[in-house]
Length: 233
Image (tube, rainbow, N blue to C red; front, top):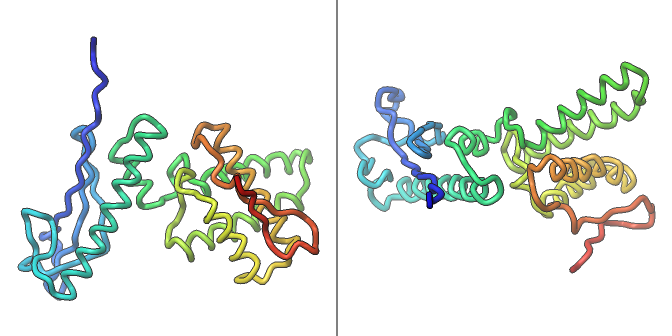
């Protein structure tokens, strides 16, 4: 009987010595290799090549600089490891390119929340042009999309996020962002969170995620309700 082949996964940090900066430092790169296919990405970190441990892919010594950079490299490794493991668990496979794009949070991911939201808005716009949907509703969706884009950029320092990264904390923090950062009234928060909740349900239908990350979040239109309620199992 043929056994299922488990993919091979490796992450290596190395220096890009052919592009030294004026201060003599070299950019630290990350190489993701899955099943023999490699993709590289920049870590936005740099170090003097003389202080780099080639064998272990880390900065040598225990100086403040070494400890700081090594901690950041550990964080990057942790994030990439989790992305890979989640892909294997939820999708059954992972590629170096998919892991790279997910880590970068770029909008070309098919399973990214802003990517899916934008696609939905474009479809809705065509219905508006056919006078099958209202312009005012479309305007609302665009407003929510812009708020969500700014929220992800400010809170997560990302251009986009995969649906599998979303948790109840995400929608709770978005609620807080609307309510306090943007000073939105309660009913406005209700209006702006509804499309995001619908996106999660759409992601389940598309097979992008298995469970609704926002299932414990609850909000209603009552003006007397000062905050969001959470259902407890």
